[in-house]
Image (cartoon, rainbow, N blue to C red; front, side, top):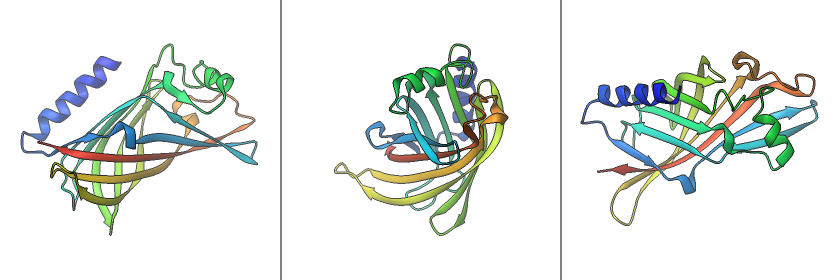
Amino acid sequence: MKSSLLTLISLLLIALGSNAQSWKIDPNHASIMFNAKHYGISFVNGRFMEFEATVEGGTPADFTGAKVAFTVQVGSVSTGAEGRDKHLKTADFFDMENNPTISFVSKSFTKSSGSMYKVVGDLTMRGNTKGVELSANHIGSTKTKEGLNKVGFQLTGSVDRNDFGVSGASGSVAPTIEILCNVEMAEQK
């Protein structure tokens, strides 16, 4: 599955052409997190500590038409509770043994208003691929000391975990999972 995803991303990048602006994610200033309601009275927050992402296209002022792809390593899930993290990796949830990654590949990146964009794409989890829609807020742009453009985004959305076969603890964990991604990236020359 991982080689298929890498092939898909490679073909996507080739299709974009050589003139597309490439952006490099700053892993020290980026995060992929989730929020799950527990027993209807509290929330459990988690994040994936290991991920890779590519962004092609866009300018510091406008990312209409940009292409986004990311892959997270399920084994890097962290909720602050070792036992829970171990359980999330089992077949009850992410089934890490058979599905070591979660991936997203965008199909469209369109401006909705002001600094807000709508990102539509395919999310693959536990071998199940479903279309999802995320909201992307272009937080701002700046220049690095070297004169390169740097931009920041916050992406938000939600998914029904049951749509992907992540159905463990159905009596205590709500089906709707909130997603929050913070991204800081610099243009590549």
